[in-house]
Image 1 (cartoon, one colour):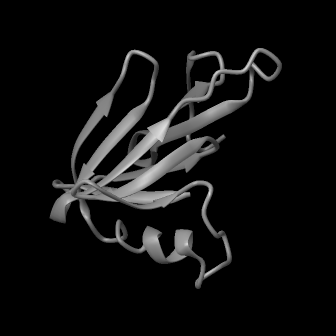
Image 2: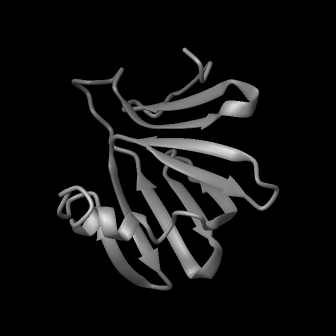
Length: 118
């Protein structure tokens, strides 16, 4: 789970269940395949790069890949994974708690709108 704030301090929550990477300028800092050891692993250390950063922009591709630009030239790229066997699994879930909204992107590239407070 990643908590995000936009420039108006609106809180968003992002759950990732697919491939992703954190970049700084054009350098890849960490990916979903890196060390997951709590607090000391590369993912934990790199995730701190986006903590407290303001979201400057969101971009969604036609295949529901997500690109988030943060302040200080830090980026999160989320890559949707297609699956014939697990079409109801989700790739990522973008939530707006203040509006009780959730947008889940499935492994079949579908968007499911729901409530955040399920």
